[in-house]
Length: 280
Image (cartoon, rainbow, N blue to C red; front, side):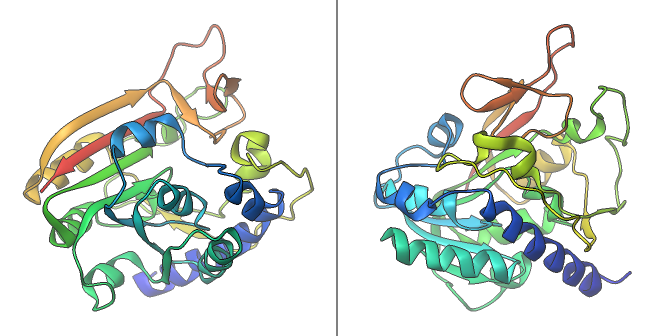
């Protein structure tokens, strides 16, 4: 299957899933207007001071995190493949009164294009963004070119090792899978995670199966860090955590304090999140 078709199918899968995800969440605009935030402490730690910073949020989904970052003082631009997600983000910005710009585009097309050619102090991506990128070397090279001198790229990701284990904590998929395409629909992970991904209030409802396939990729920690170094960036921080913020990655994980999920008692801890900070 060629790349154009893969992207088109992935776009349709995310459009379908985005409608389901937002249907699980009560009035998000009111939540944001009341100084609510979808950010976790790890984002605040890795990003640092945002006031007056120009921030590019890649694969921003429906904009909840983007607007939470803007509420902390950043001038934010969000980019996502899904028209459904970008339309929702724009309306959420209007309804919440928090300004941000949102663009519907494939990430490489945006980074190489003429829109928003100004440089950024921060480029940010988080929570399941990198698996949708087919070439992390190309990503970091393009991100470097969009960073102002001294600017930083901040990644807060689910750890790539987490995708190798099933709900019984048995190996199910390879950690090393260069060039392999993983094809499956985008799940209703908000419904499966409950209130931890719906701080505005959770609405339980049945979700019809997603009829559209999406296509993802596996990148190891070494793939990610090496791509940043080869792009000419300086690694400033590399972090791992034994829990996943907000998202129940599979049914074997149990709820932990702070709207997180982790391995249950009796199961050895695993790295479930990865943080990388690199500076131009």
